[in-house]
Length: 202
Image (tube, rainbow, N blue to C red; front, side, top):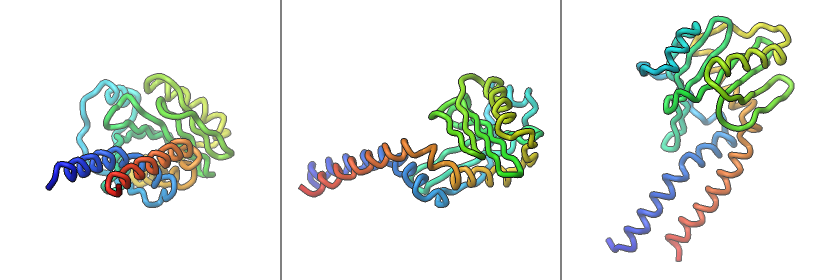
C-alpha cells in the first residue's frame, strides 16, 4: 500500500470520526423516532453532586442511554423526587444537569444549567439558568407555577415513564430547540463530505 493511500485512509478516518456527533444530531433532528432509548445498569460514582441529590430527597432511577449505533451514545444518571420531578445528570460531567416535569394535560417543563437558550410555547417551556442543583430546582419550581397553572405534575418516578418523556421530547419539542445546531451540523457534514470526496476523486 502506497504512502498516498495511507494518507487518504487516515484523513478519511479522521474526518469521519469528527463528523459522527454532527451526523447524529442531524439524524435526531430529521428522524427523532430513530434515536434509541434504554436504561442500562450502572453503579453510581461517588461525587458531591450525587450526595446533594440524596440530601434533597431524590432517589436513583437508573442510567438512561440515548444512542445512534456507530455514531453517538449519551448517558445520563436519572434521579426522581416524589411529586413528579426527574433530574438527569450527564455521566461525563455530573455538574451538567436538567430537571423534567410533565402534567396529565400534556404540559412539559425542562430546566437546565447548560446548553442553548430556552424556548416557550403553549404547552412547553425550556429554561436555562446558572447554578447548581438548588438553583436549578428553584428556577424549575418558579417556571412550573407559571406553566402548569396549579396543575400537579404526574407523580410517576419509574424508568419506563422517564423513557416516555424522553421519546416525547424528541418527537414533539426537539426540532425547534435543535434547529440552529442541526443546521450548523448539516453544513459541516456537507463541507467535510465534499472534502472526503475530493480526497478520493482528484
